Length: 316
Picture 1 (cartoon, rainbow, N blue to C red):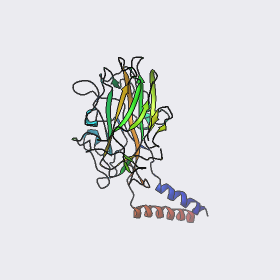
Picture 2: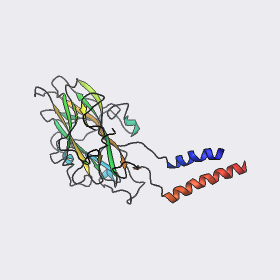
Picture 3: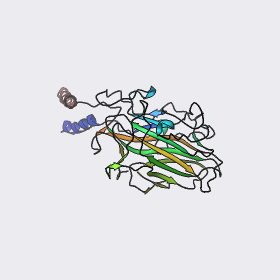
Picture 4: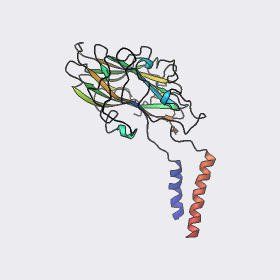
């Protein structure tokens, strides 16, 4: 009887895997070689290293730190055909906090041990340049369910842009580099089709002066009201996803009711979060950091565990 009670937990333990979400995000932002704004192709945090899988399970990008990663991300030029990169040099005037978006949902310490808030830079919206494009690319052989968008927004003063929109760009990331994919496709599973161009993802008006932490659900029912106010798209009813070999591009659009913006607004700690699945039915999850165990090997391991229990009982 005691052995039977131990068999079920052993088998469940065999099947259990690391279920932490996959995340790719930026805590600092690079300025381009000339001009102002941000162009950044190397995220500071990327939990989608696939070195345990090998080429038979996933495609790989080969750009710098993105070698063998299932996701890449961009801000600025490579994010879209227009490549908006905001205005004003990235600024140190507002320091990062220690979370991606809502602190209760995504502490940066959960994803990296090397993060340091001092000396970090933010995307700065200034001098009439109030748009920035950003994108995520799925290099894996699997479906990436895009579940959350994390970011912090900081309104500098009464003259800063305080209306914020996040919209989807159906043309996808700009192609031409190995860290980017051709075209884009963000699918609404409920409808079975791609979201339309400039689809409103998040909208907030009259943001107060100071910093607000945001975690926006990208797999929720269309038009749901966010927990922190504003309308948003995106839990369970939509299950939006990016197919294998595709990307999804988005745009922050800042504005002010009276049209005059002479003060700065900042975006900080920007990240995508989601999970990988074998297909769009979302019945079998796949993990970048867990190699699949062939069924015969898994069964052998299970049976070995059982025989060990019987042997231990006999010796006792």
